[in-house]
Length: 511
Ligand code: XMP
Image (cartoon, rainbow, N blue to C red):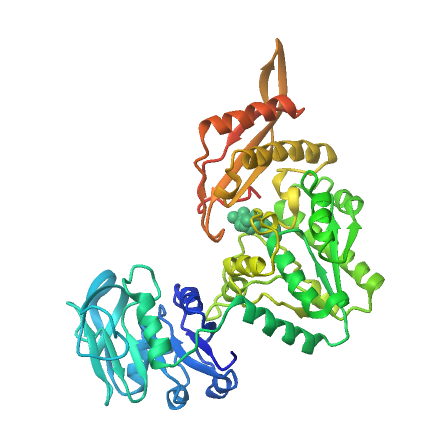
């Protein structure tokens, strides 16, 4: 399978993740690499095809990112998309000019002549454009294979060199036959084999982990969520009891959560339970700033892991549930820093201080691929469909300082909300649902008495990747039932509100 890998050279387009995803959907493994990857590295990675992505720069400007020209001598089929096409044309001797205005949106592509890239597709196809420059001169040996009303060469190719370019974006849904065009490139032109499946992924990872870890031990923190459970299961299959899996009860978990994780995972893994709830709360006393809370919790996790590493050691490796988008988003093509909205603590800082080497078995997967992997590993649906839950737990859902009393109010409210969602079959309809304890007290009336108590906000969102989200249109009857139950059953709450803010501009969590 390693000789069957498609490298997508990253010139900074916002659609780059999609290129890798679309290729993977055809069961061919694909990864995104920096645009200036060297020909040797490409050879080492045994790529069967290269895709050059789009990008925000203009190929005509000084300093525009250029691939190493040696990539065109490798004999590996190349597909350039948008900027990738223009750069290919320029390097091979073609001409790129500035358009009169930027073309953004749908266009009709008309094929010119036969050829493998559009084989089996209609003569006219709707495609998605997003560019300013366009091709005005072909490199020697290349032919135009598609045009649109506004540009005479919207696609070009050289069948002998197996180098092609398209001005439009085949990776986005709006391009009518985008998947077919990519499949033609991968299978008809590059001869890739559709053999990348989750089973082959597991076999490959197992071998890789076994070779790297040898007889040493790996520490892995599991939370009961999808990513860490899948990660621990893959590691367990690879190294058996040399995996030291720990579950830390930091006292910021939801009602019954620790017991549930113990019940569902304890049977599958040799799980060490660490009851650390007495350590976290005192350190959070009086702390209201969300980022401070995250830092304190992150640091305390480090200490707990350090102690676990001593107790169960010697331990050489630390497993971390990094996913592919984490890697892609953390390094932009041009090295520009992206602003930190929230320091999702993950286990940041851990490796340096603990001098543990990192093992990141899921680092090449997207979130939905992790779920598919979990199904192949036969993990129960209850784990695979669990809503995400932040590492700092309920601490970032109690606005203001965290106390035992406030934790217990929030736990009860959250429990009612989530169990009602499950009872009504709505749990799987939403991406994430949560209750937030607000730092305000409101006036109410109960019986004949005035009350002055806490307000709780309920939040449920739909999303595909948590980057954007919309508030879930939960039925009014349902919300009313949850509200009545919370106000009646949770002592200290006399008001319930429902959050109707989308992300952006809000975020999913309140802190
Ligand atoms: P936001 O609130 O940024 O959340 O829209 C996006 C997703 O990330 C989760 N989240 C966190 N996860 N540590 C985590 O491990 C954190 O500090 C953290 N903050 C937010 C959030 O629950 C949602 O799924």
